[in-house]
Length: 64
Image (cartoon, rainbow, N blue to C red):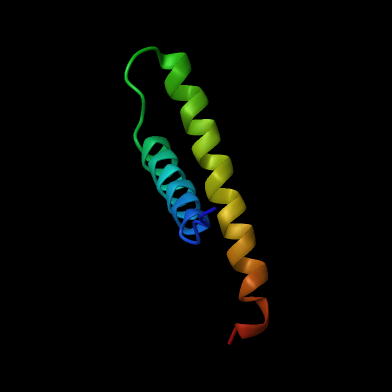
């Protein structure tokens, strides 16, 4: 029986690639209805706010 030591590394790489694809997709405004664009803008705004909060708490002690 062979063991595939590289399998977890490959699976991790696939997950990272999927996350990057999702991020790129979210950065591009969808074409089509105004409703879809509005939903996209709301989701993107929420993601940006979460990232700001995360960065603010991460660097809270480093403020000059």
